[in-house]
Image (tube, rainbow, N blue to C red; front, top):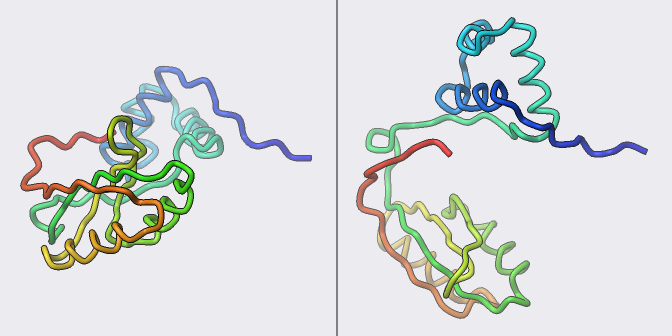
Length: 152
């Protein structure tokens, strides 16, 4: 019987490694080790342990929004009947326009971040969200510009 990997107790070196990778996930191992002040083999083992434990779940490309990302960004708050949450989340997850979906507290239950090409497409997506069984109410707002964007 195999057991799922356990989350390691992260120390300062692990957090430093994660922060370096957030800035540039393509840094060569020798550069990571130098920045961490440790041997290349230590950095490599730490990285592998973080990947194996599911702390690091993947690597992605960051793009500068004004030059590469086109379209309209919007935030949609969604109120739903709690018994329908799994079905609502499943239906929302199938929409390619939704880039992030958060569970939130307060008047609304979910916060969906959308990216569409136009106001017409945004309107159509909102109509499709509103007819999902279990969705009670939505509130949407269009993002105009980014004032601060730090890696999480």
